[in-house]
Length: 206
Image (cartoon, rainbow, N blue to C red; front, side, top):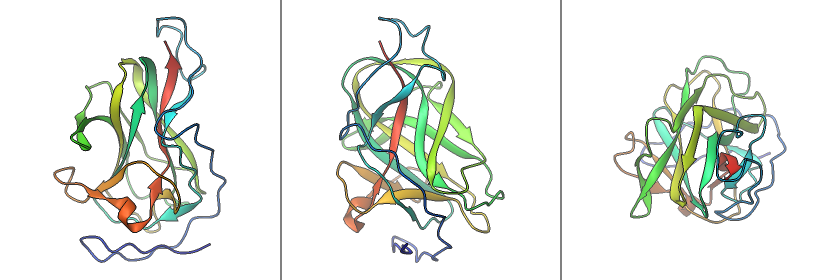
């Protein structure tokens, strides 16, 4: 496995790579297949009935050098109204436990970049990632009715631990993937460096 070093605004320090993990295949680029849920209602959509309903179509297979106070985002299209239970991202922490909580939120699209959080319900956090590269799911406090449209899944890393965490990447793929080192005030296209993120929305069709 290779180590990745990305020079962005700051010079990054390469960290120990996570153990090899098996990615989960994307359904289709920027719009996933949909299943589950009760017709027109979100009452029966929960963590027991949901699926990776919309994703970037990327299968990550390695990790990404991470620095403090970095946000990562991927754009995706929701082709029809859905019930959203949460978000997911491919990542690991190599056994670290000293990096605090990671917030994951769903943002609107603002002229091809992440805009702002859709609403108060579209947020969740996680403080213990998988040791090896894997899908980490973050649930909302309650199921949300999400209209069709263009959105961004935003993963907010803040505190750097002794050996992680990392976000999973692929060197092949497509779509729109960005990062920010100033809490979302400005965004940079990470695909210029040849990296693509595996992020997505959990939920059910309506």
